[in-house]
Image 1 (cartoon, rainbow, N blue to C red):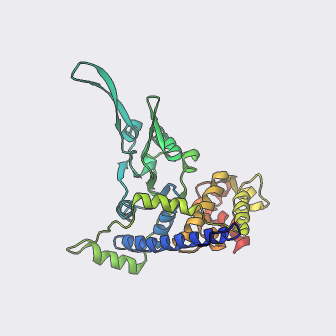
Image 2: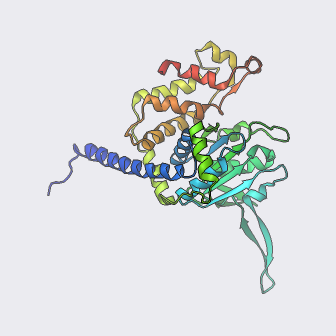
Image 3: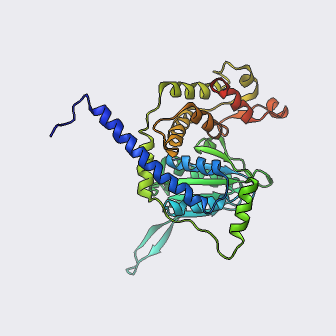
Length: 338
């Protein structure tokens, strides 16, 4: 029996990686079909959410009420077999209501001690509904959880389950009594996903499927362990040098202090940091895997630039007064690569 030589090893590894990506792509087709039984239309929203999970990140879903944002999160928990919990954010919600707290207990021998009671953040998929209605103090309680996958209560660290994802929703209409998310927390979200109205045919299907005697449900397709394996596989997907250079150029061109574009200098108050480059790199890899491709293309970069960058940039006061939209600025950044 012949052994693999050093010369053959890269070819064998490449072939093995291609096989793994192809197998995962087939599983993800089943995941999409399972979600499609419950969520009608909104294919781009579903895909961007799946890309977020494959990349191991968190997503901020922005849309008016009634667009199935909550239903999407519940369906994702079912399809991936994740333990999911929901927190309805309100101004009186306290950090302990999310993280948990220590309570003083007395045992049968009269000895007293503290016992930690876990909060809803100890789940694999946490939905923070209307996150901008929570106070800044409560919003900040999620910062460490989202970045480090652990929380500190009373000076003691507590690890969160793996995988761990936060999918937060936000209503863009009613802003009275809300607290805008700070830039530090926005940067922790892998993508910002704009959820729009479904098209006519999708709304027709939804109308017929959800008002009858039986309501469609999704079944489990993958396990949490398989999702973690998929996340590791995404990081092994090769990325061409031209794609790397395009990611760096687009992100750096969005910074007023570094850009060569006069429009950006005039319209952008602050631009995306290095975490944006990291997120865009993972996003294009995950999008390629979701489509069953072995390497990302420039189309992946252009498709993911908006959800990755739009919440990591801020317009200047003058630009907002002139009615400039952040998506228009991102279009200008991507223009050389179209």
